[in-house]
Amino acid sequence: MKTLRILINILIVVITIPLINSCSEKKLEELSKEKRNFRKAITLVIQNYCLEASKQRENIFLINMNYEIGEGGAILTDFDTDGIPDKNDTTAAVYIDYDTSDTNGDGYSDLIIFLSGLTREQQDHLFPCEDKLQDTDLDGLTDCEERITRTDALDFDSDDDGVPDYLEVRNRMEPRTSGDHDAKLDLDMDGITNIEEIKLNTPTMESNTISIKELEVNYKTSRLLARTDLECYDYTISNISILSIPGFVDANQFRLYLIEKQSNNTSIRDLNVFSFAVSSEIQDESTIIVDYSLLGSTTYFEGTGKE
Ligand SMILES: [Ca+2]
Ligand SMILES: [Ca+2]
Ligand SMILES: [Ca+2]
Ligand SMILES: [Ca+2]
Image 1: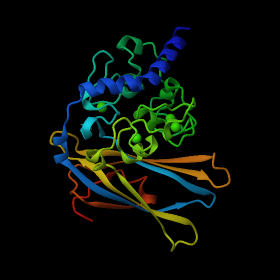
Image 2: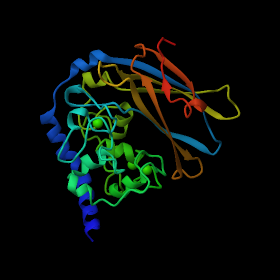
Image 3: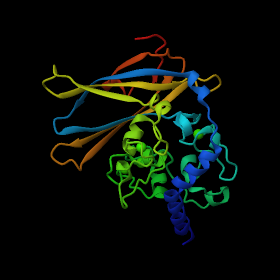
C-alpha cells in the first residue's frame, strides 16, 4: 500500500503547511512596495445578473490570479498564476518553476506539489492523472488534484463553509470537513474573517493595515427594480488591482466565482465560474462594463480608454 501511504503523507503535509509556510515567508519576504507604482485600479460592472426564480444569491469572489499580498502590504507577483508567488516559485527540490503552473506536466499543479513538498522522485509515485483538465465541480482544482487534497470532486465546497475548495487551498486554508470551519475564523485578528479576506484579495495571515486596505477590492450590489419578471442585479466591483510592471505579464488573469443557493433548500448550491484577462495596458481608473450573459464568452478586456 505504498501509494496509499504517500497520499496520507501528502494529506498531512497539506494540512500542516500553512503555519510552516507563513513563518518561512516572513523570513524570505522582500518588501516590494515599489511595485505599487505599477499598479492601476479599475472597476468592473457586471450588469443584468438574473437569478432563476428558485435561487438566491450567496456570494461573489473576484480574484486577480497574478499576485498576492505579502508582509507589510508588499505586492508579490505570480507570473504563472499558480498561487505561488514568483519569489517562491523556482524550487529545484520539488521541481516547480515560475513560468508554468504544472512544471512537469503530470496533471498536478505546482501549487499542490509546493504545498505537499513532494520531491521530484516522490512525484513519480503519484497515481497517473488520466484527464488533466477534468474539473467536474468547476472549483479550480482538477478531479485528479482533489484526490490528493481529499476534497470532493463533485462538490465545489467540500466543507460547506462558503469558500470553494480551490480558493481554500490557494489561501492555505483547510478545505475539508473537520473541526471549525476556518472561513469564519480571523487568523490575523484584524477584524476581517478569512472568507471576507479572500473576497477583498487580502491575506488571511497579515493584518489589514492602511497599506493593505488600499488594495482591498470593493463590491457593491444593486437590485434592478425595473425587472419585475426576474430578480436581477448589477455588481460594481471597484479598486481591482491591475499590475502593469515592465517585463511582467501582458494581461492580468482573473477568476470570478458566483455562488447561488436554492431558495427552498439552501444546502443545495450552485457555482458559476468565469475566467478572463484584462490588458496590463488598460488605463488607470478605467471602468469595464459587461453584461452577465456575455461573461462566459468574453475572455479578454482591452479597455484602453476610460469608459
Ligand atoms: Ca507562480
Ligand atoms: Ca474540482
Ligand atoms: Ca470550503
Ligand atoms: Ca483577518
